[in-house]
Length: 368
Picture (cartoon, rainbow, N blue to C red):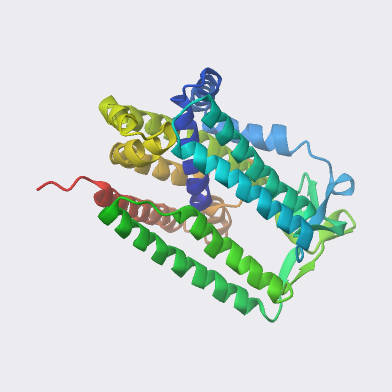
């Protein structure tokens, strides 16, 4: 829970923190309302809201919300060619607009290119044949959780894992090469696109080439509940949503403070050499703001880990409930059980703090 929550809260908190400083009045005010509302409502009440007001009113298993299963297939030729052509045109417009002098025409070209690329990708996914409906409902949402098919690995899946491992190694090597070249020449490389192709597209192509070596075991309604498949329990979802949204409010303020701590002259200097607002934020402001953001961010990660012990209030069987409930009732050793529980939380917190301190040392300024 802590691992998943830290990742999601970081992405959400950074997005809201940047949005608070947006030049768009609506975006900035919505982000401010989110932060002020979430931070000033107790976490326990938010957990009870997600569990009792959002997830509990869902229908029972017999009236489950049924969703179709989407399977992967070999894409069709004509839609693929049209999608590639449209994406290439959109990319050309976007790149020409980003490298030209800022004006109304370049803004229209940039927006049009982005929209064209999005339409090309979505159109290909919807009509190109890569994703197909399996023809039967296999995902069910009810007050007992989200139930979906259980994937079973078939012979040939080892090649997909090998392609994934090769893609990860290739992405790391390309990122190292790109950083070295940028330090020497100042030229940037499309690290994100290359990493996406190596980590996602390459294993996907191998998966299709090996004949989709995964079979699905569909859940079936038997009696009062579904049998088979995998289930995500509503208590887990409520706890995750509560922890992520609550912690993201504090992370957003940390990010906003870190960005404001960077001298305004840095932004003006970046604009003076021709950098646009997006690259300025990514390449100039955020790297310097991270030195201010990381120390208090560590505290929020530790708070999220410790706040996960509130899971007992919504019935989720977490560490505290298992140890101080089941184990304590069976053994009767209260001091030992509570001490073990405290030691586990202490170990997790110290491990998290140690990793963040190492990362903070890497980002700190090196003084001569």
